[in-house]
Image (cartoon, rainbow, N blue to C red):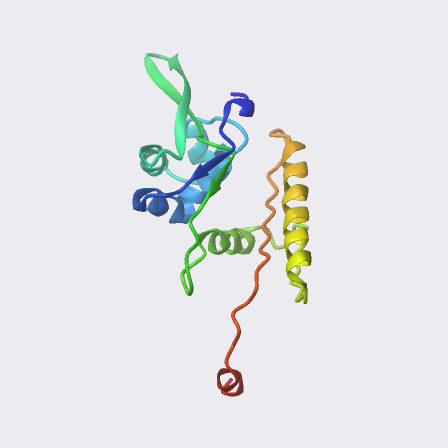
Length: 179
């Protein structure tokens, strides 16, 4: 299925959708489907799940509207369904102050599960930026991610890019001194 037919963004707006994307297994299933459609068996193999578990999680994602059947075919009398993402990207609502950032938690879990002997580029930088510089950097990071997403080739292994540009919470003086 060509990705040109997909909407650019799926906005998560309901509790059902938020529960669907909040699960790490379903997050990994969506990662499998981000470049090409796959069957339940293919998804199970790539994520390391039993077919029944894979089917359960895909059904929840489908019911929430995050994935959809894009084609079917008959194989020895059984209808095989190919699933794909419903959009190129998913936008989650702001978790609010103190709320868990689901995407960052999943990204850290994926990083921790990645091969320790593999090449990684992980860096944290503390910056002091004007509002204009902050906006410019955010736009540049997004443009860079979009540029490389356009170059993505489904025949090569996945690479994950995660970035977070934010203003950290200001800690009270007494809170810092007690640590």
